[in-house]
Length: 108
Image (cartoon, rainbow, N blue to C red):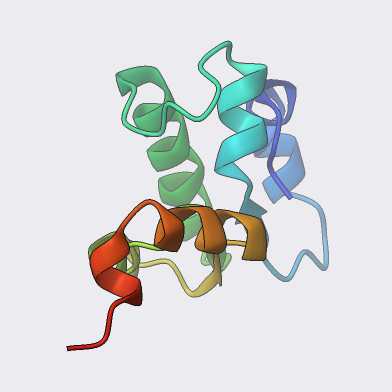
């Protein structure tokens, strides 16, 4: 798991570990360690996440990411970017998201 900016600073060493099967980016903790908690669109967070993915890809190491917000478009975007596996939100975030959007919960 790459969840801290300290891990990004050691990314090449991490990716060179023999037998490494894959890496998973934890964007919430990563953004917090960068002083940009949950600001997933912040340019510094975006570029750091992209750096992890591109470095892993260059070494043919599968890269995954946790898609924190349950937004289908974000999920599709991550697939198009080449992520090989995805963790999709968490129960508390999904419940909060659904509760904040009454149209999701209403039947027609």
